[in-house]
Length: 115
Length: 119
Image 1 (cartoon, rainbow over the protein chains, first blue to last red):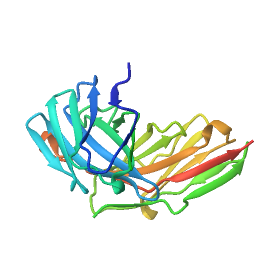
Image 2 (image 1 turned 30 degrees about the horizontal axis):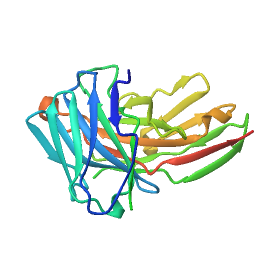
Image 3 (image 1 turned 45 degrees about the vertical axis):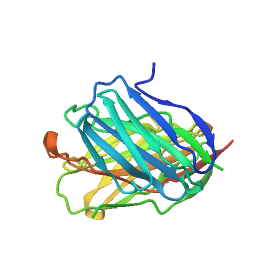
Image 4 (image 1 turned 90 degrees about the vertical axis):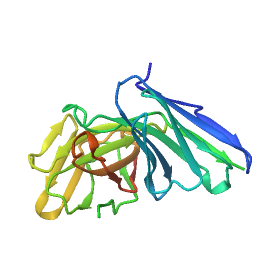
């Protein structure tokens, strides 16, 4: 099983619909993140969480919300999807106290298309 | 403010050629980390390397090598004898040092360099 699992892998939804992207991890990390990737813009941070009681906005949180249901689960919701939210979404975890893996571990991504 | 610049948006090389991907960064921190990630056509992001700001030693891993120079704020990535499987988008990233369990490990990504290796 992958360390960080995202579901669904691909999703097409209509404008105005509510959609949830899910992320679960088996690494035991406290820190989890949601990023979106757009061509020519790299990865931009949407939300991050340090534990189940700690949720923080990133650079581009407008139009998104998150829920940290457990240490291992971090969901991203689009309350009313719009076409410019079409992007590749990544969930990631990190543990800066682990010397051998200071980098993020990313999920495989969710490709979301809003029509 | 942190900034990562990958000036090369797309590079094409013929298989077996060497190729260097450039990364220039800006930060006010004295302690920071630099990363490279690979994103193959399948879309996942694969961690390649982490470098901390106190370690300017170059690193080699098989056909991959990294040249970190604080004097020019650069962290360049070279692939020797490129192969078709190296075709991917490569991201350089910069992270502040996390200030303990209460600190936020801000990571700034470059826009990526798309490498195409032609057989």
